[in-house]
Amino acid sequence: MGGERLPFANGVFTVVTCLDVLEHVADPGEVVREIGRVLAPGGLFLFDTINRTWLSRAVMIWGLERVLRIVPRGAHDWHAFVTPAEMTGYLGAAGLTPVGRMAGLMLGSRRRDGSFQNRLTRDPSCTYLGVARR
Image 1 (cartoon, rainbow, N blue to C red):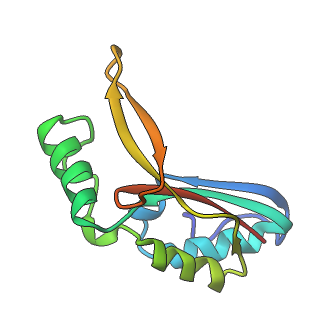
Image 2 (image 1 turned 180 degrees about the horizontal axis):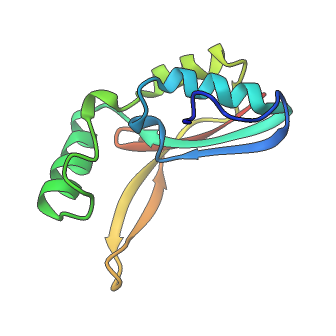
C-alpha cells in the first residue's frame, strides 16, 4: 500500500502531513488527490518537497548524496522533483486551496551532531513547504 491508496474513509482527517515523500512516489498528483479525499472539509494539508531546479540537483544529489554522503546515493531522482507550479496544479485537482505563499527551505549551518539547521526563505528553488485547505 502506498500514498495512492490510503485505507481510510473520505473526509476523516483534520490534518494530513506529507513531508519528504512526493519526490519519491510514481504519481505525486495521485497522492495529493488521495490526501484531498481523506481530508475533512476545512482540513489542512501540510507538505514539503524538492523543486526541480539546477540548485536542487546540486544540493540534494551532488552535495548531500555524492559529496557529504549524508543521503544514500540514488535516493533522489531529479526528474521526480516537483515544481511549485506542478504542486499548485495537484492541489487544485484535489480540491485543495493553498493557504498563503509556499516558503523555501534552505540548508543552513551544520550542527555538532552532524544534522543541519534549516531556515525558511522566500526562495523555493531548492526545497519548499506549504499549507493547503480543503
